[in-house]
Length: 167
Image (cartoon, rainbow, N blue to C red; front, side, top):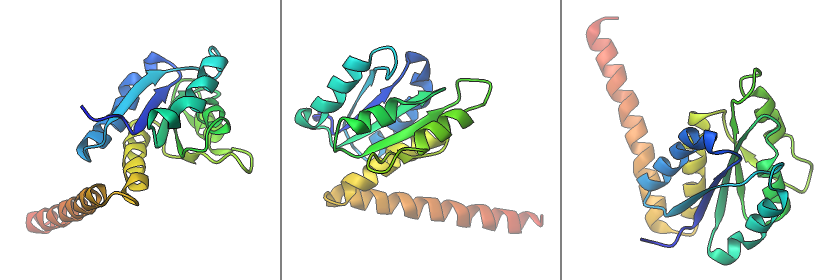
């Protein structure tokens, strides 16, 4: 197995079902990843250590998913120069809006690329990580191009089917 270049981390193992979507997207592009749990609030020292050591372990992009106050991506971004992609997770009665705002509202100087709430966001985080890596890796770039072509072809097929049905 290849050495991971993307790290997927979440604040709780209850987020695993959602964050697996990022892994599925990465697998589709042939990108090796690791997956772990660490919490900005319950294990702040572990989280800071994880972030500081990620680049030395060969990680090039970090995807961080968290719900509620959702500080995980921001805390990680504060401790690394690697690109960090935040995935807001619906974990409270606010249906993820709290997480979206917490992840997206980073202070100047500590960027976190923030995607949609939940599974669509986790999928997009995996694709965005591939796009970041694809800038310097032509094999990944080619797979991304094929992915875009597949999406476009799917739309054309749906349009044709709709027209044929007379709807």
